[in-house]
Length: 325
Image 1 (cartoon, rainbow, N blue to C red):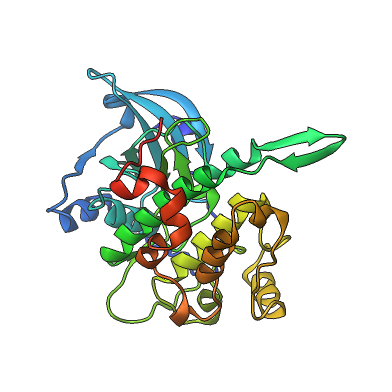
Image 2 (spheres, rainbow, N blue to C red):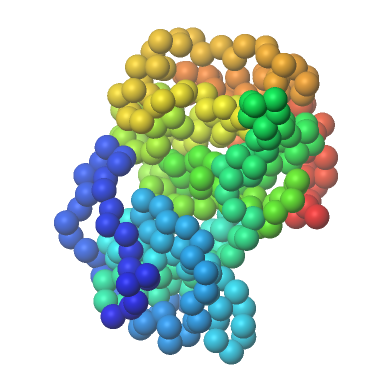
């Protein structure tokens, strides 16, 4: 039995879907992914890794730093209950290889617990990066707005990851700042999209399961049938938050709250404020294209990457320069 600190957290269903009582064998994940280059093993994690500091805990699992015995390579391990959620994450990550998506290096199973050995990202989350930009001034907390260059590079990396996912027929369905990891700290970090528990494969039919995080979910996810463009809405919400330091919808805790606020703001129009003005009209225009209520007219990831504002401010990113010192 693994130590207590490496047990997956007790999970509640916060996504409006059903929690399955059946626990899938992790061995079945390996048999379904024979073409995958991901190493799959059984046995206690401590056989091959030394456990280091905890890195965080989410709805689906705990994460901590580990060091591989022998090579001394450092990774992050995500610990979660073997079952439908671990299967979704494995199926999504096993075949994905992109500089802005967290890489799965090894999948391990022991006593009903799944261990995913992944890239170690020491810079925290994008949410933490934004929170660190708040400074007190005359008794008030003010958001130190990122430069257009910083915004452009972070948005470019996000869109490039989403473009790659969608070209691989994968929909993330839970894009939010907490699921966007930074490889290291600094003003212009490399970003990696993570947490693929809710990811699913497009199979030619509209998706119908209502899942995600209230405040970041696209309106069509709440109402029923949707496509990969739900991810673009979420990217638009994250972009708004990076620009302003504020959530687009405040005090939204349930999908019902989220939907009622969406209806109250139909059509959704972003006001020209100082936060947007310093970046030029193009930034707000790009956000508006991603936040169209009707998904049919919403920008795709590839289309957003062609936007004049992003082409200008992403600098070398369009040549593939994603690692920023």
